[in-house]
Image 1 (cartoon, protein in one colour):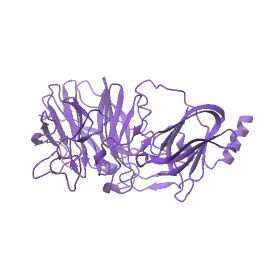
Image 2: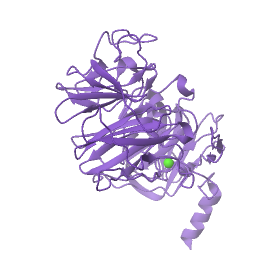
Image 3: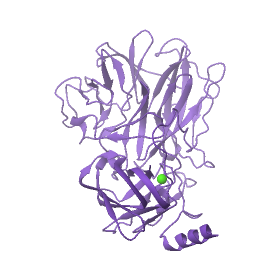
Image 4: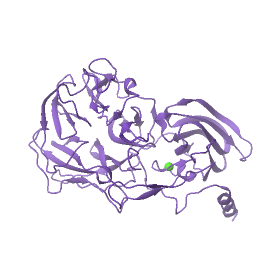
Length: 457
Ligand code: CA
């Protein structure tokens, strides 16, 4: 009974609790940020996710800085700064996965619309251009582009090293070439012939049980699709096209629109398909991961795309999470209707209530109203608990945040837990607390006024 009264009181007091009309159409995105064109690798027990950083609000005119998210369990992801310093201010798209060769790590991003090769000592960087000076000029850095010669246009590099050590590069427009042992010189550039003839980008290439798989996109926006073909001979083919060559497509009922440019990676015999989703229209997309399964004959089973995620792929270590019962905020951004692009069935609305900062889903977020000069989010643990640390995943973390964190036993008197006056580019922002509080409150002093997730231990 007491519990009920308390709950009712909490309901009255708080500005907002998620209820039926509060909609999160974006489920369990892989990381708490808008990212697209993901390339994921697993190296020595750590997953690395390289991607285009979305959410900067100017469509294809801009992007976020080169950011690599890391995780040891596939649930808790983090990043710190950027991994390619000279490219930090450039339009940085669709990095390939980082790949090991010659005792180094190579990565192939599209920068200002051109493909480049970069190298580093570690998959975390710092990367620098392989050829020429490590700097960018427009339209492109003459000596450094991957494609040399007359036509240098190309995007979305994918790299693959075969069991015999030979390397290959794939890119948009069904292009494939051999990559010389220096990992930067291309030769034998060939256009693959596919069953579907429309515009194509975002190629994915991998080998499983001796079969080469080439996946390519068709369409875009909310009608993005992946098709594939396979070869038992070589990355250049000849290729066979299975009767059902569709890998992924929009599922209106499931609310998954335009599953497009991503990657396939494996963890032993388990295969996974990461894809971007149409998201909040334009370059405000998020990335999701589903399992990829195969038939006995090696053909790919069409992926039933969902936004549910695949959960932990490794044991989750660390202290136990304390679950807040309620979240309140100084203001809430009004729900936003997301415009469809071509298909009017792909309408949806996003709510921004405080409860979305504690729902365990990276697709939902609390956002303060645009005119909120002192955006504050408060969580209530239900009773005083010993708190070891707080992890805040802010919205648009790659642009950085400054904030103040406070704790309280009664919601009246507040004690400072952390003052972060300098803008830091990372996620999550972690504070060690080691005190008993019932409430925690964050005041965002710089950066986008929103929180994807707030975890307390
Ligand atoms: Ca959330």
